[in-house]
Length: 119
Image 1 (cartoon, one colour):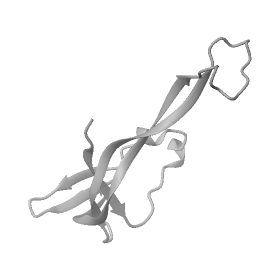
Image 2 (cartoon, one colour):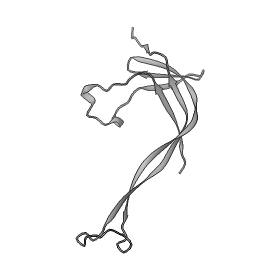
Image 3 (cartoon, helix red, strand yellow):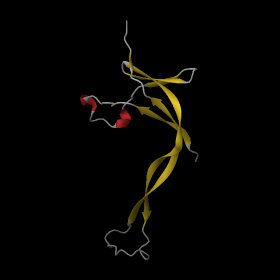
Image 4 (cartoon, one colour):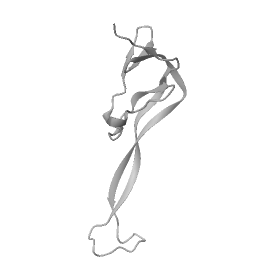
């Protein structure tokens, strides 16, 4: 499998989840909308705020890893652990890390957000 190119968003400040939504998992949220202009400026709209940023190369690339759990049957004869005969199949849980992406750039938003006001 190949590693996809990812980007890192660097924001200044704190993003807060509304108290009514704190029981939801993080992947249930949409933080905002990211767009790019022809002048290579990036705009990130969060609610009624717009941030302006730029693309910056990282000094060292970062790897995005995913933990994969595996259940391997245990070889009873070579296992140093005494196994109970109550359970006919013994399973050993192992995990491995799978590279799913690489990050070579970040989009840096270091200025204060601009308020978007509807007229």
